[in-house]
Length: 282
Ligand SMILES: C[S@@+](CC[C@H](N)C(=O)[O-])C[C@H]1O[C@@H](n2cnc3c(N)ncnc32)[C@H](O)[C@@H]1O
Image (cartoon, rainbow, N blue to C red; front, side, top):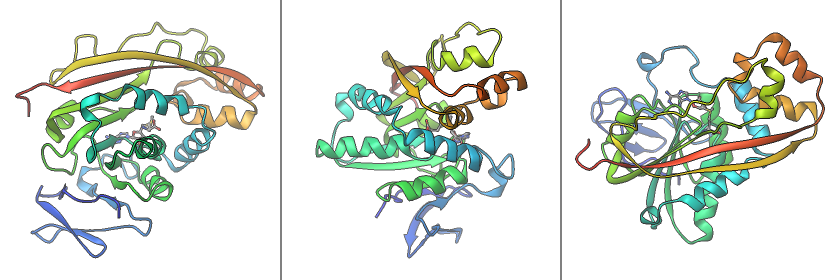
């Protein structure tokens, strides 16, 4: 049974209890589990649009691309960089903006190989992403929800992962244990450079995020991981393009130029930064 324990009602913050296939709070707010086992804890009043987050098409492209395993080195890099103090059985992990669940699922397998039990929750604002994730891995608790208002009590997690996502640091700090750690994985300067060189006339200078640090967090470690992979067809190129923000940002001419290419060697350049919650913070 996936972990859907120790969650909070998104309407009033009361504890949620699993009764049959519903999560219910003391004030009778009730959230049914979907057939595939995920739960939607994003009330209509917390939605900024009717269908927030990644669309069904983007989720499908991301899943098709990730299942080709070109990004598996990122799973390895995350596991290799995992802080020693968070390598214990029962470690409680949230993947905040989990997409279709690729990383959280593969990380669980890496922990299993080392006989380390994990309590994993994947949360995303896109119901399409969570629906897809809930079919991928039944060992994980999957939630439709927002990083802006995590439906969990304070200090619910030991580790929060935010992989190419949208961090909300106050909320992450609240949901982390005092000794808890946050991993940010983001693009580095040469990430997908070959794709960008075709899409854009000019490549903008790289600007690192959070140059002045993050208020509630202390940087513990930082590393870059570069690797390359081959895309063997126009369909593979389109799957990669469709899961990146470039699908919306690039010009019509740029996208047309991409359509004429059949094979591409692509550089992945990512940055992994582990942060520790500052003591005394919420
Ligand atoms: C670039 S994708 C990354 C997905 C996944 N982490 C991965 O690397 O495969 C960003 C994800 O963040 C989700 N998202 C956007 N805003 C969010 C929010 N406020 N709370 C939670 N998820 C959000 C999107 O639906 C999308 O699945």
